[in-house]
Image (cartoon, rainbow, N blue to C red):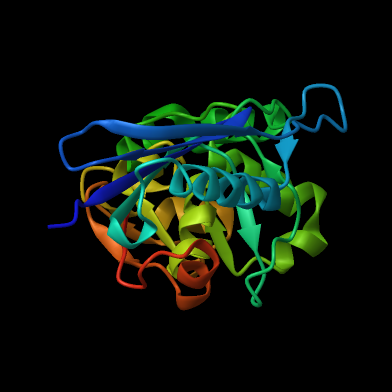
Length: 238
């Protein structure tokens, strides 16, 4: 009887780590692929989402080619990753601009607006949080004010690991845990906050579908399965 293999991928700030395990939890192989951090201005922090995908492919190919690993035995892939980062896609699902990361500090004005004008009490009631510079909502407001042409192109908003999940499956997905750090989630009712979306000028249609972290969001797309040499029925977990 063939073994069942599980793959974990972490989309980190300095690199992506990929590991493969058998059904007993024994790690068979691990690989880390690094990528650059761009700082076009003081206090800014950006990355190219394509770098995450390339690092993911590199890591998957490395661990799938390790001794004792048969790619045909892979049954599941799960992702974790850096929170709060803003990834925006247009209506053709192309990346509009470099991702603005969790450690980017450009949104001081927008944070002051959210905490001061909208008010910490209201934010807390809507999202169980207040605004910080690294959160996603202030970044959306920054784009609206500073890059209106890019802002107008936004068809989908997601987090870094959600982008990789989308490339793997074709599903726009986010898990509740990561979504809670966007300042856009109604944590109490486990749905996108209509009031916060309205404040940011975006619609629920532009947001990914919400899943529990352990939910299966779909299976790998045929082109990804072919690229990696794994079955098309491999499940991907939020």
